[in-house]
Structures are given as structure tokens and as C-alpha cells.
Image (tube, rainbow, N blue to C red; front, side):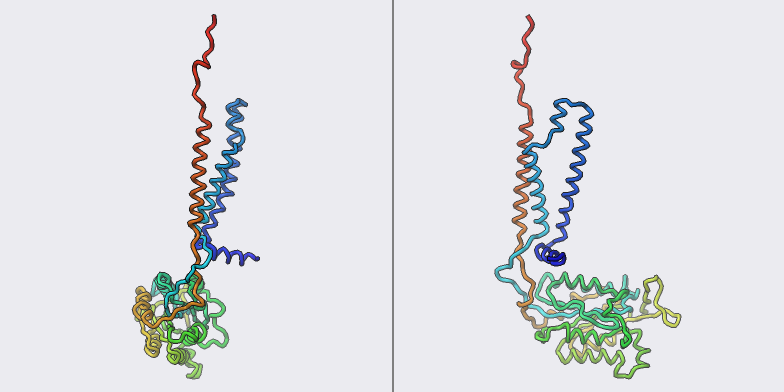
Length: 385
């Protein structure tokens, strides 16, 4: 068994596996205790070899060792308890009906614009995380993540594992794109709306779940490369034609597209670069604005809706509850996450037992160390005649 397999077992065996790191405190306490005991003995030995000092420096008794074992066992059980041990399936796995939602995330450079603080990208990411929190409380809905820039790719397939989705979402950064999203020599545009829709409909969505599917796209609708490329390419190859083809595909498959626009539609904003400057073209800063036309058309053609988030908070949770969640739902039984039985009460009870035993043994040892009362008649010396 390699290290990755061991970590996977630990991840499924504990609800909070990172809390197991608290076990590292035990070796540190042991080392500190050894050095403290040796230092104490050296200080006492300077006072002489009196019987009282010898008693203070004598080795630990069996009761003291037993107390230490109880304390260690109690604290170990307590750490296991708070880490949330879990194993064994529930007798009847519970499932909640839901829909399949593919979130199409715009990872193009224009999403770094400063007209929304801290950026369009971070505002969209925060809205998605709020949606995940809402979905996780209810359960039943499966989510997938598709990101697009110069190219598009499935970042996270359909899953009930919202934590895994969060990890994949955190990896997407328009300032440092994964290789699968970067442009190539044959890239048509810097923002592939149509390619993102195509991959969401054909690769991210499950063909057997038609009628229970939705696409949620969060974007600024802007493609700074569209104007110049349209002059060089045939009309059938232009970026506008591509997103219309993607929209038509979703309409034929019966997948509604819900779009959310982020950014300033009037003034727009500049695109910061990693070196602290702004993206320029022909010596002038590139200005990007929220372009609502394509986002509105995508929604209207597929029986979805367009939500103008602009520079304010993105009402993604309200959109899902008020529109998406109202559609027909299906129950997923084959790929639902296993529900493990929580075993923390066993370890919590064990911790209470050992810590209580340590406390009782400590009181007993103190009573034994107390000196017996001295009888003055026995200790009194006879008077000299």
C-alpha cells in the first residue's frame, strides 16, 4: 500500500482527518517532560544526598505509570473522537431527489478586471461557494464544473462530493490558467463561450438524465479578441457564430442555460497583470465591459433566464431556488455518496473512562503519600532520672 492509498483510507475513515495532526503534540510533551525531570534532579542533587531529597528524585512508582497510561489513552481517544471516526454503511442509504447542474465558469483574462472588487473572477467564485453551501444542506443535486478561456475543459465531473468541487474550483485562476485552458496555434478566440457550452452539454452532463439538466454560466460576456479575429476568419468561424452554435445545441438537447452577468456594463474596467501594470494593446490599456447581449440570447433561446449581477453581489442562490430547483427531479442511487455510521461516541466514552480513572488514581496516590498522625506518647523521650 503506497502513501496515497493510505491517505485515501484515512480521508474516508474520518470526517475531519486533519485533526489527527494533534497526535504530534505527544512526542513533544514527552521530550519536554524528560528534560524537565532531569533538570529538576540536577537542581535537587546540589542540596545533598538527604533521604528527603532521595525520595523526591526516586523513580516513578507503578501507580504513577498507570496514571500516565490512563492519561495518554484518554487523550488519544479524545483526539480520535473529535476527528470523527466513521465506518460501516447506514442500513438504508437516504437519497434526496435533485437535478444535474453544470456550472460553466468564465476563466478568461477579462474576469480579472478591477471594476468589481476584488475582481470579477473572485466575485463569481464566492457566489458559487455560497450556492454549494446551500446545496450541501439539502443534498440530492449533482454539480459539475466546466471552465473556459481560449479552450474549455471539464474541471470536475458530476458529483455529490461538494468538498471535491470546492477544491477544483479553487484551482482555477485566470492569471495562471491550466494548460488545458490556454490558447494554442489553432485557438479561435480568447473566450470560448460556445466551446464551454458544448462540453457542458455533451461531456459534463449525463446523456441518461435528459430532462433533469441545467447549465449555469457566470461570465462578463466579453471577448476582447472577437473584433479582430472576425476580420480575419470566415463568418462561420467567428466567436459569435461559435457561441450561437453552442446555444443551439443546448436548445436541441432541452438543457436550459441560466446566465449571470458580472462586471460594469457602462464604464467597464482595466485588466491588471501579474507585474502590477495593466494589460495594453497598441500602447493603450485594454478596457473590458460587461457584454450582456450574448448572455441574454443564450438564456432566451434555451428557456433559461439572464440575471444582471453587474458590480453587486451575484444572486446565484436565489436564482437556483427560484428557477432551477423548481424543475422535475430524479433520484440518484447508483453514484450517491456512501453514508458512513458515525463512531465518535465509542471513542468519546473511552476518553471519559480513562481520564476519570487517571483522576481517581491521582487522588488515591495523594492519600497514600500523606503521613500518618504522630502519637506524642510514642515519640516522647523518657525524662532523665
